[in-house]
Length: 120
Image (cartoon, rainbow, N blue to C red; front, side):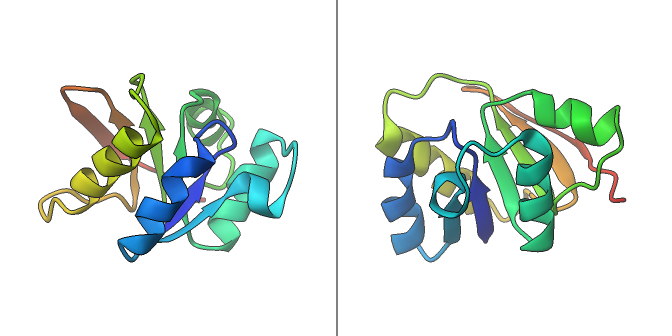
């Protein structure tokens, strides 16, 4: 899966995601101090699912109707470390019954909520 990790996602999660075959890029690797609109545009232009802890992205794509990336994963949990976060993402992405593209997904410790993501 092609992922873009927002600046608030620990970069230490990258090695495990990459070694598991995911094409993962961190915002800090390609742009610094990026605003929300720039991060959304980057994810959309590179066909990447955005992974973030920031709820503002939902407002931008649903209320302001900015162009959405292929998917958004909003993390609503406090991981015990970067490795736990990466393993959680890997476990979720390996679930063949769950789809991440075309959806706004909210990940909590004990549940996952998804809704369709309107594409501009």
